[in-house]
Amino acid sequence: MALTGSVHAHHNFASDYDPDKMLVVRGTVAEVRYTNPHIRIVIEQITDDGKPLRDAQGNPVRWTGQTMSVRVAQRRNFTRTSLRIGQVISLRGWLSRQEGVREMGVSAIIQESGHVFLAREHIHGGRRSPPPPYPGLLPGAPAER
Image (cartoon, rainbow, N blue to C red; front, side, top):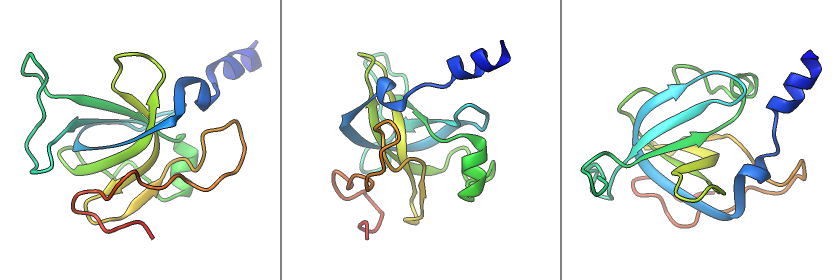
């Protein structure tokens, strides 16, 4: 029974996120849930000049990024203290397949310094492929090498 629960809890990333819809969103960290099965980061999107982006009701435009498991994060030196609330970062990832949801499967977490935490190199069920290129230069960050 326990095995069934853990298998049920795990899912194929490609079933939730579209491998053909890569985007980069820049914002301030509003929340980090450093728990399994996947770390989740919530950012409030900002404009190129650093101003908060608002929806029609005047609320902050929030994006949720699903990243790696805690164990994988620790192996990649991404710890509970790697991000702080209010810090400006960019999340690069694949858009959720759910219509109208501001969520992505995170490929990379890019700090303003240019430091990148790679969360996921591929999206297709276990196939190894190089990470996709940035869809454009990130404001305030060096070009990808």
